[in-house]
Image 1 (cartoon, helix red, strand yellow):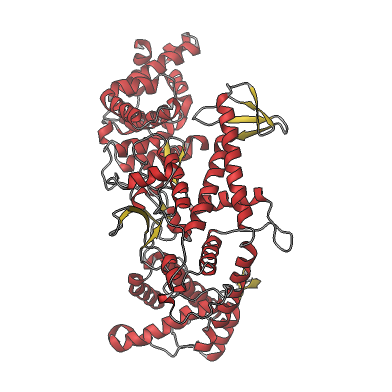
Image 2 (spheres, helix red, strand yellow):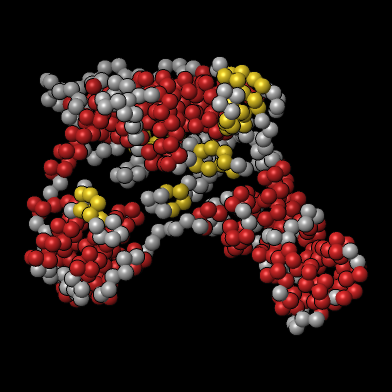
Length: 633
């Protein structure tokens, strides 16, 4: 180390700068990467007499001393390529040993015992300290984002997407409470302002641009973000940008009849990037309705605030009959009714398939866990060879097809596919309501007459901004108890995770969501796409086909229609079914049987309905007992 340090400091002393860090930056070693030792050898003649391998070892030992002594702070481009095996271990013990011990203790307390995950997280934190200086308590969110960006640039993709280090810093309160819940939240686009939505379409006229920005700003208070994005696309993209392309220099909302007619004709077709028609636009009338509402809003606001809106008031070029959706709604309703009629008879077969797939994948996983790595075992009539794997995954080789299989993922996919089908068919909730179910959704209602506690499921506001309560039947209680037991994993409470809403482009605060699963060292809420993929796999296993012998497709919303149809056929009044489903009206589906002799549905006495009032059994008993106690967050 003495020999290497003498040569290294002599080489740095030949470069200009007030500090050793300035001389290091002026030397060009940052861009040389692993070849930085060659620059030292070329500049110091005394090193030429020793073997190159020994010279490099001396220089690396000296560099470790300068890095851990905070003399030099190289950039990430150099640090992530220069990775001697002992540097990071020495840096952790010398830079902030107390902070590292605190993080390791938190890993033990939270069940993160995988040595590879711990090492990856501590290495990332150590790189931040070597680059920024200071202690672990000085790390900021910006430091984490900068490191993650450098990892994407200078390391392979396998080293990315491992945000345990960020979770450890957030959970130990190194990062402030206002920090994003996950590192991924810093990389995903949030809600765009009206000006950003308009500028996406590069409108040529600045006055018209300001008009659309003002209009969207006024409407933003009463619309969710997804609706605002859709409105901006219709107004700026499909309407005005199209007019500017075909009518250069247009600057007024007063449109001639020929211009309007040509635009309506172009709107009927979808087009590629070159402007060639590729098909008919199904939502053409819906887009016309948005444009008509824009003209009518401007005219109404012009009477209320002439100084701001009167200059833009113009006759609406779209008639009410042109944007009527009555025919489209009838066609859509008929298609949905036919879709429901085709899926209602095969629902029992799909339920049996989901249950069988869940049990078979669980049996294969249990058999693999009982076998040691390198051993052959049999399960469900198949032979497998268990492979060695880390990170808690069970990999096997299917000896029949000589292919590797992840039994852990297969069991997860089968379980969550089964849970999705069961919860959706027993409740009729929407997919966004399904993903937002949490441990806080359970409410214990005490019957005034008997004093017995009845479990209720609270559905948070979604489409209609109105929450509602659903009765937890024994069958639903069994499913929810299975989900809670799985997610809890032996812990006292459910893990707190943050979920991303792709429509609102926002992250929820950490909550004990029911539909979550472990992904590496952390838990993540199941996304809409993941739920649909698991559901599609269950459908593929079932082998169900439609009338044309094609694979039958189910969407999460199909279960909502099946729930409503089954409820009405069982004698449930439409207005009660509408309340359960969270609808604002109670028009029954056209494929439901006619309700004869019922003049006042609210006076109809409904027959016996399955209810959880009888003594619950099994895990449902534990679920009921848990509801009698105060809920833990």
